[in-house]
Image 1 (spheres, one colour):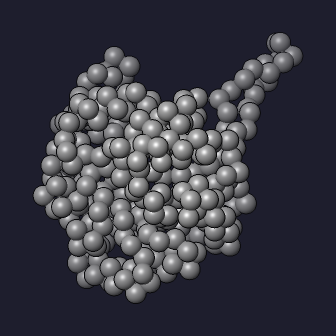
Image 2 (cartoon, rainbow, N blue to C red):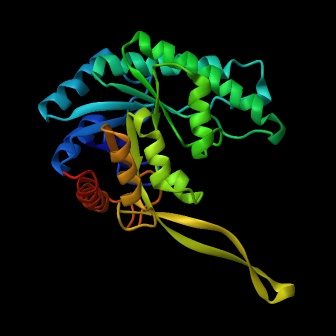
Amino acid sequence: MTPTLFSVSYAGLWGQHQLDPEAFIEKTAALGYSAVELMGKRPHLSLLDTDEAALDKIKTCASAHQVEIATIAGYTNFTGGKSASEVPFVEMQIAYVRSMARMAKQLGAKIVRVFTGYATDPEAYHEDWEQCVKAIRECAALAEDYGVILGVQNHHDTAISCDAYVEFLNDVDHPNCRAMFDPWVPALHGEDLYTCAKLLAPRMVQTTLADYIRLKRFAYVPGLVNYRSLPEMVRAVPVGEGFLDLESFFKGLKEGGFDGYVAYEMCSPLRGGGDEANLDKTAEVSLEKICELIGQ
């Protein structure tokens, strides 16, 4: 397994310190990670801003620092845009994924990551499912044309449980579509991480880690002179300091034969804040735990 750092961690999207792609790659090498996952949007690999010269510069930087470019992370929502059905949102996103695959090929990356879709109307769940299946199947075929694997990450609402995720991949039924199964979603839903990991491991090319603590929330009800429970808040902490049972997850991955990329991401508000020193410290502590989990 290959420890990997995701550039979203230094993208400034949650007020954290921001680095450009070259500075991020240099940072990755200094922190001790072997590979990077690059975010396929501003401020990193934007289709509007990243020409061939910029890609060559990024590739040269990675080579100089002996850091592998593993994955380009696309951001898709294939159920979006229903309020304007005349606009070809799905087609535009498939074209976006094709461009990500082209950039991945030039950078020497092996994988392009996509998501499924967020829930729309409850009555449209099957329709949403089929729309995501068809779009991702087409994306897998287009990525294959560039020699790049298409990975589906379990993030959006469509096919979010472990069993539904397996069913979804079976429906896509394309040899170039692979799993990028993460533990945080099934952990939040109370699923057994060992069972999920062992089941998905043979189909996986990457997993992405983030760890969290749970913080209970309540709202005051004056007439009852009491509080009612609300959904818990979760807050990101270094890997190994949260509630995720990562030991069981990695036991399942190993028994299932997974040997791909293990990416770490700081992609939400982080304990300690978003200044560069805290990001660096959290990434270092997390890498130590990742190496322990994978047996390095």
